[in-house]
Length: 258
Image 1 (tube, rainbow, N blue to C red):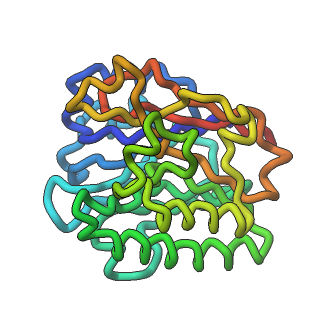
Image 2: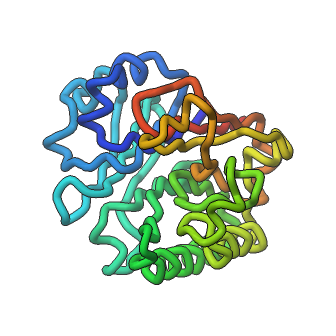
């Protein structure tokens, strides 16, 4: 089974940049999208008419044109049930989480909050990390196999961004944000990409549009697949599809075998 995750930075915008053609050909069983910035009625009809995918679940923010997630399924035989949010009202109004239960695992498709340039949303972001982890730890404690994928909006280690020293005081690389990713890893999760690929450098998933950073590969790795330790025997590959364009992020993915 192959699962892909992509922050598309606007589903309507990326649809004008070849997304639908790519989606129809993408070799995946589940496609998780973040920052769709649209209500379901605003999604391209080709994407929701079941011509590409057999089923889907979407979650939009109360604020128009903001945040939003969607999870698409290609295999009609895949037994799955999806729900929205984590059960905490102040976080569930922004369309950031879709939880999918399958026979083999629980999949969380998440668009984590951004702390903002002036750190005005930092407390909200850190609270989100904490509340989510409390929920995930309870599921892991019962023996569930859990996958958390999406845009985490934080680069964990210096190797995960091109210019760590320049960003040490910027949200997305603040020590307190990075510590939360460490806490997830200490709580029974594995960074699938690093587990498979080790400490390879220059592996990024987001590049700032403003400075043509992608052309120079001055990027950040902030899109992840964190898997619970009991899924490790099933992990066969983890990768970044840096050649796929259309957003300031690129897709990332994992392959599992059951």
